[in-house]
Amino acid sequence: MPRMPRQPAASGFYHITMRGNAKVTIFECDAHRWHFLKLLKRYAAECGFVVIAWCLMSNHVHLVLDANDVDLSATLQRLATAYVVYFNGMEDRVGHLFQSPFRSKPIDYEEQLVNTVRYVHNNPERASICAASEYPWSSYQEYANSPHIIDPNPAVGLAGSVQELLCGNIDYDCVVKDRSRTMYVSDDQARKIIERGCGLDLRGASFKLSKAQRNRAICFAARRDLSPKQIARILGIGQSTVYRVVAQTERAQLSQLTPLAK
Image (cartoon, rainbow, N blue to C red; front, side):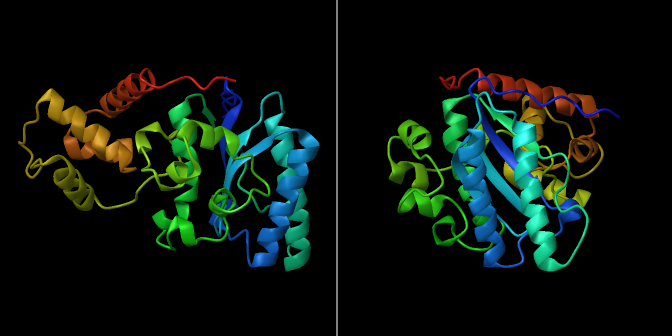
């Protein structure tokens, strides 16, 4: 099946995710992390993109970039190739390291940019490693102390201050959704998640939901990264209904956001 073309961002801002192939570890030690950051800074200068935020996890990398008028695919391929050559040489290995292709999500709204930066910084906390403020391998420390790789101005300008950017709550509905994230739980666990979150009783095959209750349950379950197929199965509806309700809700949310001026 041919790959879908990447969706361009009118603003030039993107949320990039580079994952290890088959979820392999891409950073074995701090020396590897420092080398990746060195390459990131080098290619930002050489290729003309601006780093807004970054976070290095054990098997994936999050980047927020201002890459207006930059060939994003070619640029990130150069970055990935340079790191793989280094990593394979250091670890005496051969072959692919990164999952291909990398994921890019356009950021076209002010609220999305601020919340995506917060989301990227919050990855260690979501992974139950530590609080964002305690994690040494993200641009949180650059925002809190002194910029080295990033340009803090776009996100700080929209948030109002460094403190507000770093400490403000994340509105996950404003973050560009990563469709690769799926929560793998049993149907019984998923049902309990929806019941607790929406105040519903979904036990038995004869439960009845109003349209409003159904839509609320669909959107809640989607935000918790349950798969459309599982949501449809638990609620006793068609999978197309799940897609339609989620898409309609996201369009309504996006219509209330402020376009990110370039």
